Structure formats: C-alpha cells, structure tokens
Amino acid sequence: MFDCYEAGEQAILVHINFTQEDEWEDLSEFEMLVLSASMTKLQTVIGRRQSPHAKYFIGEGKALEIADTVRMLDAEIVIFNHSLSPAQERNLERLVQCRVLSRTDLILGIFAQRARTHEGKLQVELAQLRHLSTRLIRGWTHLERQKGGIGLRGPGESQLETDRRLLRERMKVISRRLHKVVKQREQARRARTRAEVPTVSLVGYTNSGKSTLFNRITKAGVYVADQLFATLDPTLREIEVKNVGKTIMADTVGFIRHLPHDLVAAFQATLQEIQEATLLLHVIDASNENVRGNIKAVNVILEEIQASEVPTLLIMNKIDSIGNTYPRIERDHEGIPRIVWVSALANLGIDLLFEALTERLAGTMASYRLRVPPATIGKIYSEFCQLQCIIYEKYESDGSLLVDVRLPQTHWMRLKKREGSKLGDFIVNEQTVTV
Image (tube, rainbow, N blue to C red; front, side, top):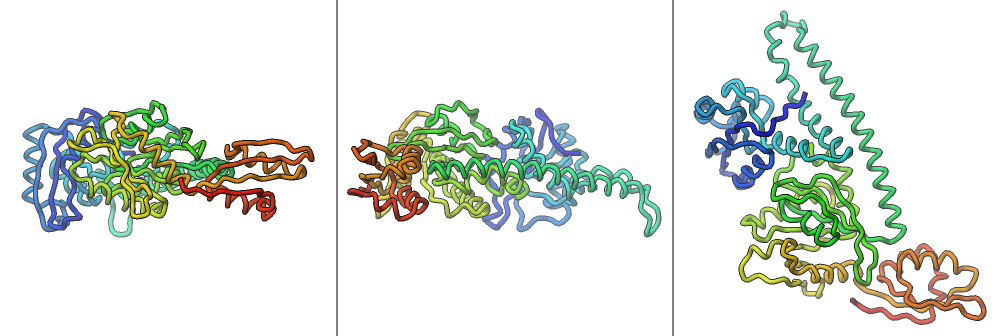
C-alpha cells in the first residue's frame, strides 16, 4: 500500500522559489536528501512563483516542461522540494506519466530505510499510514470508469472503504504498541528521577554532528555518516560528570526544516527523551552557511513538542572547518555557560564541554556534615549512596553515623523534601559553594 520509492531510481528534481521568504527551501539540502535516499539526480528544474498553482503546484507551462524532460531523460520519478496536495500529485502524475513524490514522501521514505529497532519501525509505519490515509484513491483510479449512475457505489469505492477500514485498524494496533513503549520509557525515567540521575539529550539539525559528538563523549560506536537522518533510533549511554556523578546522555533523531507533522506525531515516544531531559545540548554545524535558519528550525520543533522550556546549552560544532576559530566557552552576564565551541571529529574542546556540563548540571554545590541517629541511618545512607555524594563517613560510639556529603543544592532540596524536616535537624555544619 505504501507509495515508496526504490534506491537507484533516476529522478528529476523540482525546486520552486516563492516570494514569501518563509516558503523558501534549501536546494543543496534537497539534493542531500535525494542522495541520502540513494537515488540518482538526472536534472534539477528550478522556477519562481508568487504562490502555488492550484492544479499542478507549479504553472502549467513548467509542468509541461517537466513532462518533456522526463520523456527525454527517461526518468522514473519526479521529486518536489515542497509539500503537495493529493490532487496535485495525481494531476502531475497524469501529465508527466511517472510517479511524483513530495518532500514529505521523500523524508518518510528515508526514515523507512533507516529505522532499525522495532520501535523505530513502528513509528515510521504510523507516520506513513497517516500520510497515506489522504492518498488512498490513487491506487484505485483505474476503477472509476466502472461506477454506475448517481447514488450507486462502484467497485472502486467499495475497495476504498475496505482500505480505509484496514488502515484505521492497523493504525490503532501500532498506536497501542507505541503506547506500551511510552509507558516503559516513563518507568525508566521515573527510576532515574528517583535516583536523581540527570539526563542530557543531544538535539539539533540533521547532519550537525550529534552522533559523532555522542561517540566522542560516550565511546558508544553508534552509526555515523555524512548524510541526512543517519540516526533515527535513540541511544542512551551513561557518562560521569565531575561533581555531578552518573549522567545519562541520549542521542536523538535530527530535525529538519518543515519536518512532516505526521512524523513529529509518530515519534512522540522518542521525543519524550527530549521533553523530560534535565539539559538539552543543541548541536549546531557552525560551518553551515544557514546557521541561523537551522537554529530557528530546531527551536520551532522544540516549541511544537513542548520542549522549549528545557534548559539548553548551545554546542557550535565542526569548528575545524572554520578558519581562525578556537575551542572556548561563551558565558552570559551572570557567568553561566551558554555556548561551547568544539569539534567532535577533531576532538577539540571536549574538555571544555565537560566543564560546561558540570556547571550547568551541578550549579550550586552544597557540602554538609550530618550526624544521623541509629534509627534512621538505613534509608538516609541508602539515598546518599545512590547520589554518590559521600566524601567521608564514621560511626560514633553511640551508634550514630557521622557523614560528610557534597551534592548539588537542587538535589539536597529534593532529598530534604522527601525526608522531611528531620534531615535538616541532623546537620552539624554546612558550606555552600558555586561551582
């Protein structure tokens, strides 16, 4: 049922510039998408319009030009760097006599090729089904001529109804399975929250170097390639951050300008790792000409998935591709790290990144000496062990525990809230320092 392309197909690319600046798409990025889909570009047709044409999206003259180019080059597929309505796709296919794909179809196809885990495959299939639900009529247009008179339903229409029912049932099955995945992830996150383990999620525009940075920090060995959407399935690894301890780092799917809404909705289970993160590392390709546009595109999607309020540290990556640029930390007027300039590939500035992580995750550190009575040692000592914050411990002659701990002030406040006011009663002395 899926209208998927195949690797190696000969393609004509169509790129239209509209007068509205927000409607512009990046031609070089479009060509990279086609290359990532393993298709061969025969020719790129470029045009300019005030607004999309209702019937063909492009003007009728340009559509006829594309049809002639398809016949002359014996192309197998025409790909638009824009979203097309189902009617526009059908009209164009009748005219050019080959399959027509939109930018959305292309991205969905790449995701289908790259999904490796069971969860990833389910997410992509759900996105494909949602996209396909508005385009079912395409497969049955050959039966239109068999329809009877007014009020009668022909075989084509009945087949459509059957397809829609099957499609709805399949979407329900996938949604139920993904709901289980969401619950499993929530349980894992709750366990990390109870243990006060912070989570750092890598986000950013596709091909900005997130997976390379992830491998550099975690030694994970995840797949890396100079292509769009090399990473689809999230990978979590444990790292150690000074004065913070155990930290979970997550590598997530890359974003792209005008990411299909069906895809955003389907990947909700994966995107929860971003929504629930303690800190986001927004990885940016500093060597890209459209840096500002890519940052804006990522921020738009973070807003869409309700993750814009999560604290963010900007990582300007690939500085080895820029002249006269060196690793450094840029701070705001309060001295808090906001931007770190690094090169994951050349291993530049990674120590500065860890320094910034320490400051952003630990913030204000607090050191306490407590004398814990024998009756309450067990639970409190267990909490300190989970937080890995014990610096010194000694049992007194009366059975009480004298313990020195050092931990982030925010962790202490959460622990105090759980244990009640009695924890404060055990303090012998305290010292608070800003890291």
